[in-house]
Image (cartoon, rainbow, N blue to C red; front, side):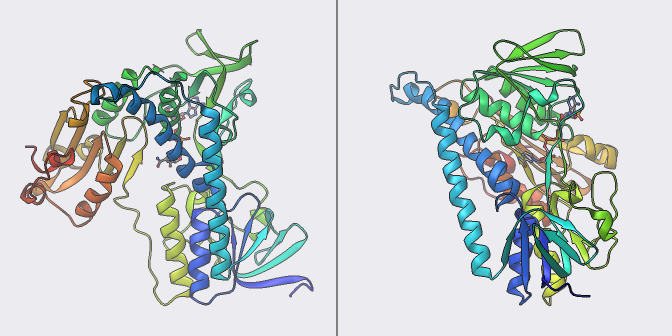
Length: 447
Ligand code: NDP
């Protein structure tokens, strides 16, 4: 039954982040009538409080090292302190610009933007503010949000979303966590002169190649970061100058502020999935290869499905869903061989298996080639951590994993991912003439 005030669409997308935007625009290009529901700002985590503003902060924090290198290259730059209020203000302005671009792109694509948080009334209808939207097909693309662990005083800490809203960065920070967000912000803040202590209960960057992580860690230490491993936070409290964190070994650490970077979880609160009969598994929505939930006309993409929580994966899932459902080109997203980068300083990028994962799967067939060296750009300053390049080889010397720590590693591994996707062997790498002098030439010359 159609409610009197209902607006009906072929597709209603809930969430205007990377996955939702990609799906909505692609479905509209196939001729579908599409509405997209967003309670926050169009662009989602990646554009508003994630990848993009974070990368701008990475660039901003790296300027300090470039200035410090100045004298060795004949630029006698006197020591200067960063103005983090200026950096944060400029980053926010760029985010505003991108937000506008994404809204305009929706408009151009003919997608109706409905502002507000969506709540399922039943399997076909969503309530958004006062409006009722009916979708023949519904796509859930609501993304994720930071987890605040159950810890006395956890509300006194910042989460990554908050960092982009600060007036200026504090002079000191305790960062809890050893994952992507903790490590990236530890390096950003350190580069901007903040005294950082990172609290890591197990390992830094769990799941990445351990040898490469050791190289990242060495580089982080060289920049003056304090990393305390094997301790967990027990409680957070206020002091007259900031915050105190009690640790599991009985010690305490103090700073002007604390950042909780303890993971992210799908943002399901308020959706009322039960009314639509959509099943959840723990905090996530399980889907099949078509991105379909247990309800035939309800689909989900991106972080809400909690598989590989990266922007390009969500975008591809969204487009594959739209092409399959509304176009004439059904396809599935390929979740194998997804390259990723951690924008620490030094940067870590990787595609394929770590040495540990390869040995677990392929045992003695695995051979490793690696090279550690100081890049030419560091020859005059005589400071900076070495680059670390690593190939993990399997049967018949097929390249199973390609890892890099150092300058431009994300840019370089992006191209290596093409070779790995094509099944390249070490011989294919070796046959490629080196481009000299470059960092990545070592990938085609190392034994
Ligand atoms: P991660 O899951 O990568 O790391 C969470 C960290 O917090 C781990 O070190 C974990 O320890 C630790 N932790 C969890 N709970 C506690 C606790 N109670 N006390 C102490 N430590 C705790 O999450 P992030 O928040 O860093 O990132 C979330 C996701 O966002 C990533 O998985 C990634 O998909 C995405 N992302 C990607 C980026 C990129 O591509 N460059 C950048 C930023 C985010 P333990 O390992 O012991 O469990």
